[in-house]
Image (cartoon, rainbow, N blue to C red; front, side, top):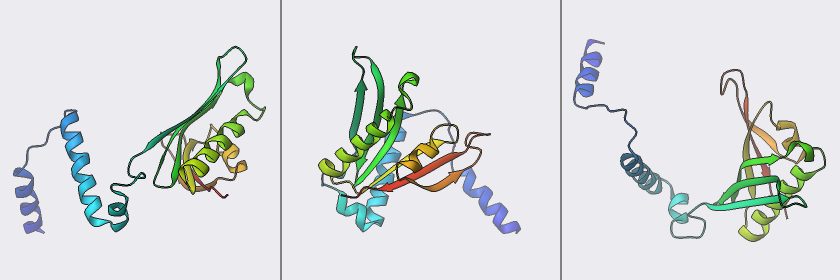
Length: 161
């Protein structure tokens, strides 16, 4: 055990650790991780240079008669996946099916125009996990206490034609 401790100490003495936010280093790290992942995964390697290589934004907006925002969905598609990042409906429009229609429109666009086969999203326990399961989504991950006192759910859905 003594050798392990001393060698771990020696390794850590060879590096200086910094904690400053550094966008240039972040970008370099992202590039190097992408290169490492591409080298390690034939599937990721096959994506390089195709239309699926980059995320493509997907937004759906619902405007009321006055042109004000009644609801919206913000997400992106990547590699045959739709990722819903935000879905929101104004309180006075809730319960009328607007959220379902926004989600259905995004799923349709993703499936028909971008060849997506699956959708994913995250939601908290006080938000809308029941809403999403009613739309055909299945819970694939539950993270309790993220943040403390709140449970986060990850859900997915097959986008069938």
